Length: 149
Length: 149
DNA sequence: TTACAATTGTTGTATATACAAATGTAGTAA
DNA sequence: TTACTACATTTGTATATACAACAATTGTAA
Image (cartoon, rainbow over all chains, first blue to last red; front, side, top):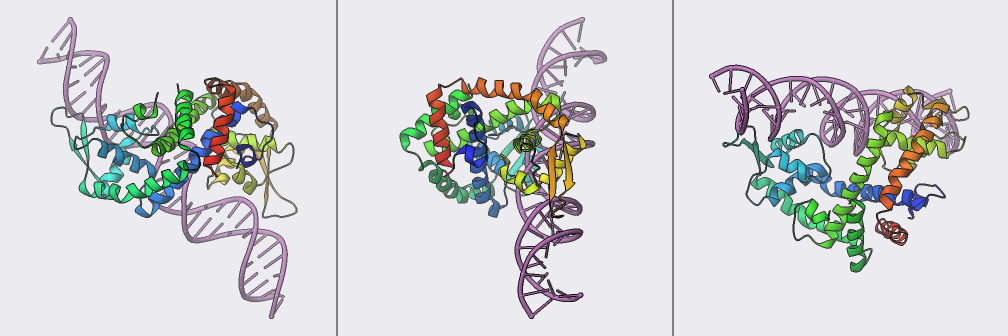
């Protein structure tokens, strides 16, 4: 549905439409993602952290590294990791060389969960992306990058 | 910055890139918006409700109407409106014809606040949109609409 | 060595959000 | 009337988030 119909407004400058459209579309995508994750009792932020940890490929990550790479910055990665540790999806140990730091690793259980989720997430992403053609996807990505510059 | 650089990953399918890019860009825009609103001690959701109420042009809105039109659906419009009532930015009265319903109106103070915010929000939106040209804005809006279809 | 600043994480507090259950009101059929 | 269903909003509970204050550790300079 067109963004102006969705918000039941008429006459909106294109700039305003664009900003709202991106936010509304992101919400739509996030809701779809959350729905996939729900049966696995994991939030999208928790999922995000797990993927970052897997991306470390064996190397542990500390909190500040995770925070930097989060899709949406949040001020409390500590408690997010707490939840994952509670579920035994990741482990946390004090860094021996610098005891201010905490090394966080994904566990076997965490890796298994991601493996189960991978195809579901992929299907979701592709079902979205297939609504426009490959060339349009590339140009969308480029323009979004420019908007953030 | 390119989305893959931002997330410090390499080799991501375009579909995944697209989904993440939209979410990351929306966060970027929301953060900018929140920063503008902060000095006025109002959250972006509260701002959203106020704009919906102003859009009613004198007619009161009830809770379900507001909820329908919210940029991001949320399950607790009651408490959101509570906050606005506390600040005297909107008023709430029981609908006389149907006492299940609540009529919510924006107050003079609420209108004045929006008038102060209008130019700031407009500047923000335009400073974002001007990074790409007018034709690209139109095509972005079209494609985002298609992604939600 | 001590003092002090910088770094890294954690905790407290207030607010926001998601979801389900509860409340109160209206309409309708026996 | 009573019972039942639908509707509109509120409340309870758990989790998430933003932001500031706090605590522990490290590095550095007097």
